[in-house]
Length: 183
Image (spheres, rainbow, N blue to C red):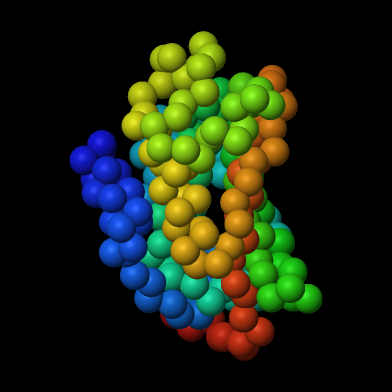
């Protein structure tokens, strides 16, 4: 995992990571990210709650990179969520600005104010009792930030110690009318 993360960060820093933009339903990318993380979700008996306007939120971005961003944020939420709690994933379209905002919320220990700006730096891990006992490379949030910004979006965190965290990011949204294929 560390080698893969280092290769991704190296490629992002050198500008060797390209984008394959397309139009896609955001909810489908979210479901794919959740599916990738299902074993970890099940191992902690967590519930994933997806909300917003899932049927009509269409992004114009690199779908595989969006799946990677959501998976990285979801991985973080899983690591720090107490067993048996919920993780929320919310889609909030902003058609006036042609953006969609995606929020990933957990019920974990939260982040102290002094650590919020550092969370998206390479190898940074907040120091508290939860992080000491949780494995990780300290690169997942840095990778998510670089991939969001590469697509023209922003990423940030809202958190209070003891009250969980919400990691949010934006992506370009399209006004295209895509139709869902029926099986």
